[in-house]
Image 1 (tube, helix red, strand yellow):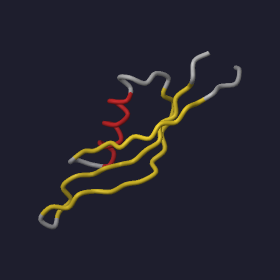
Image 2 (cartoon, helix red, strand yellow):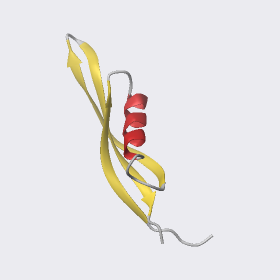
Image 3 (cartoon, rainbow, N blue to C red):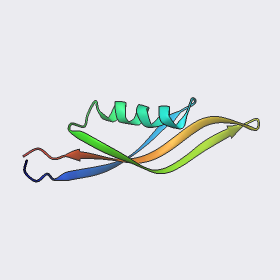
Image 4 (spheres, one colour):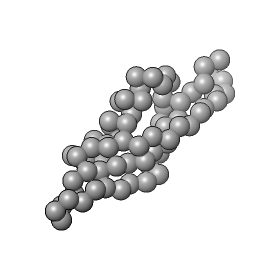
Amino acid sequence: MGSHVYKKVELVGSSPDSIEAAIENAVEVAGKSLKNMDWFEVIGTRGHIRDGKVAHYQVELKVGFRIEN
């Protein structure tokens, strides 16, 4: 197995359901235009509060993908 070169992009996924759903949404949508995604790293989380309850989750992540030779 040879060496690989990776590129990282930052994404923000969102979901009214959970942090995990926000991550999955970001990866799924990015996968429609990015190839060779190999990993992600959560770099921030935040949310929206409405009427004293969590209404929406946002997760900022970096996604690494392999550059093709």
